[in-house]
Image (cartoon, rainbow, N blue to C red; front, side, top):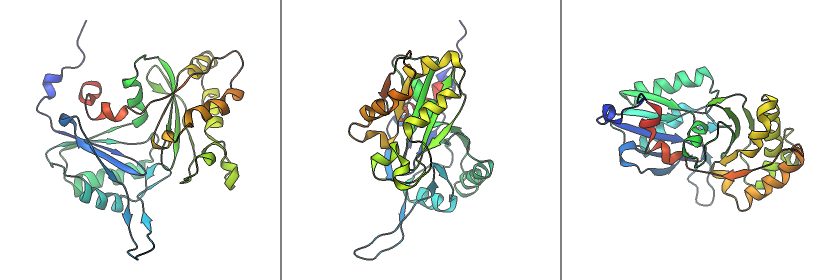
Length: 257
């Protein structure tokens, strides 16, 4: 059997990984297999009893690369000779990607850059891999629901697009006047958009990740809300999994190059 990847070819490559989140940055040297966590925001009001926070990310995407660059300057210690490995949400607009490239190469003068989709890292860490599954990434300012079939994403829905501190609103956005489905409805809609012959398998392989999924009893509540939306003949299996950062900072050279 032909060996597809040879780690030794890249043993001298310096790779610095940055996982850009709406609330935090995870960053570090891939070779070190560890990472630091920094806040992805700046304080703009220094009054004693009040504080205003500016964030470069809206609805899951970096929309203010000037501010993001300033935060990177404070938080990151990157060797310009290194290659930057940067997480990028699915379907990032071309204009935002172009601005990202300008910041990386013109401001930070990086030797190279590669983008990875965060949701694509999750299957690489599953103890029981499946060719069909649904990744639900419940982030700080957006939730991405990504059905995967044999390593390719078929349909993407974004829900929870407002920055909300109350977990209940993630399940019922209409409570605060947002006319859209909650997470359970979004999952059902995403699976319904996939071929019928894989839908039963997808309901059995729903993997939830992201910072907002760590609220107490979040997974139990999701199962309760989702079960009535699932056809009776389909089994439902929902698991919590937040390990893609481990792959990003350890085995990513092996799986991505």
